[in-house]
Length: 177
Image (tube, rainbow, N blue to C red; front, side, top):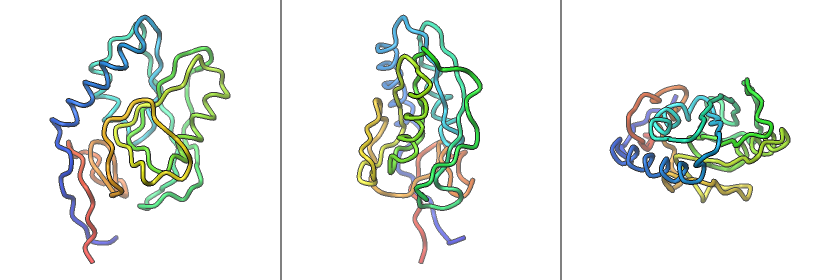
């Protein structure tokens, strides 16, 4: 593995404040509705756990889905592999996909299409981080925490080769030549 350092980019206080703002918006949009949060494993666990603290919807349910196009690399392979499917039916339900980062758009585009085929009432997406300049398919999240530059980031659940998920902040990985 290449040598690198992690430089702090977004601190914990900034992240939590923005998550509270997202939760307020989601609370307004889903007032009086039942909602299923679908956490995209593994990276979105910290984000979803924090987001749930501030949600106040009629009936909240959660499930987990795992798909990857990265493996242990820093670059997307472009091929989406589902490794854990949902345990509950989303048919005729309001679904909010919770994802750590929107990058090329390939994985979320695939997941959203897959879920729409299961006939929910709606499928929307909330992402903590959005790298718009990396998009290879036209895709827009419904709720975005932060727009970020095209940098490789870790922390707050996001990893590099399964490391740094525990960081309470978002850091940029700087590789050392």
